[in-house]
Length: 111
Length: 114
Image (tube, rainbow over all chains, first blue to last red; front, side):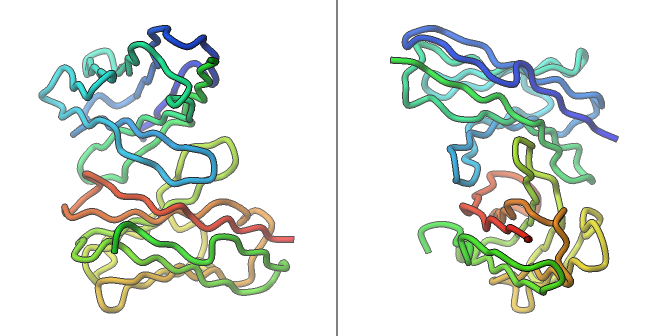
């Protein structure tokens, strides 16, 4: 059964820093790996989706990488801003099974 | 509509009551998913519809939980004889694709069972 772990659980950084959020998954036979953002009291917003054949995806200041063999993905946020404060969740999809989410990393960017 | 709409936004139920949670997906979206999110946790899959067909209900925690999407658009998640452990945020997501790709989430219904 797929298990997804995110480290750290919470992170606080000053504005302008570059940061990395980590995601690991136990079953490397994934179809894709997805990153989401969740603001308090809101649903999830899809950020990036990396297919199993891809190594990374970029959107603006966000870059997500995928290493299937080691069961890891990272989300890199460049030049962080207070508006980036939110919970970031990763989720692994293995095709026939439901999307499996991690518990998320709660990010605070301090002005 | 502009996005996925869920109602009510908040629901307080006394233990033993039945509740019904509604999800209006984006028009034309084929796939619809229900997730349960406990405080401080990631969303946990409950059930999946492709149009009106419920293709996967493996995540429903007990037979007290029932979901339907009779006309392939609006979906209702019903919980019978609510228990305190049912307290959570219930999220609905829809997608144009036949699977959890490019998901659009609603803001959820926060259910509190007292």
